[in-house]
Length: 93
Image (cartoon, rainbow, N blue to C red; front, side, top):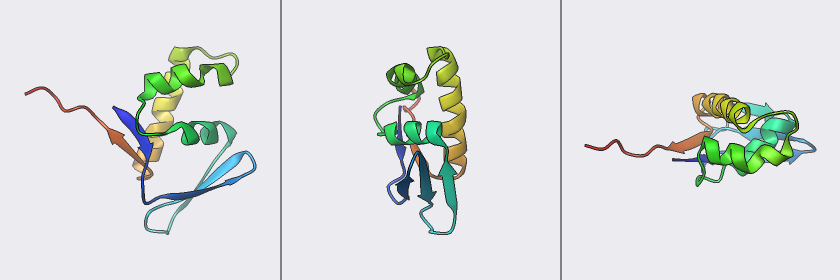
């Protein structure tokens, strides 16, 4: 499974924050510095656990498991806002 930024979504960096405009061009979302770091890493190739492992050295005082939980919650919020694509593996038939 890979998590990626939705192709029709546009965003702009403004200092440590990212401002995202949805596909319809009707809703703005701003991310704080931590959310912005994660946003830039959403390349469509890595899952939550891989992202947490790759980002762990960027954050102090958090375990990989704690970071994975935080990323999962954050990605869930982005998915609700229709800002990311989540490629889930097909279930075996």
